[in-house]
Length: 210
Image (cartoon, rainbow, N blue to C red; front, side):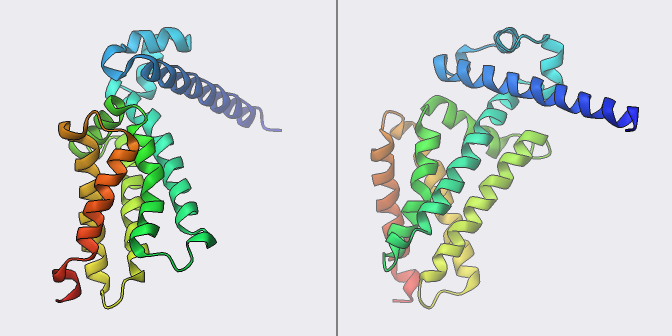
């Protein structure tokens, strides 16, 4: 065995262990008190690493939040894709199938409204070249593309219209989950608002050509 490769393997394991400790510490602290009431120093202390080491994995608290939420967001999209492809939805309306995809995502973001709102804000308005934001945006594009795929169920809608409708629906989700108007809404109340707007979009005369 090449001694150098063994050294590289140990370094990679050590880095993975530190990243996990940072994520676990940030996840628990953000869940306990909300991102605005947690400092990076507290995260580094709970993770039992130096603050300088933490900054090599995430340079700011916003990046820490994105790291944490990206994992939850990715899992929620996976859950939504599984739900929307369930045989139990065979013959269901497009609205019901799209909501099956969106419901786990809404649950994820609204589990802790402050953290979820800040996460979406950072994805949209932060530097898209930053590593963790780039990963989060890739998941957002995956969600949008998945919505467009589901809209293929609609009759007489060409590919460009599907893409545009998917963009409108993602905008509806974003605004509903971040607007102060809905700050105190439960996940189920948010879903009801999204569903009503989804119904309006999918049944609009402009879409059907009526």
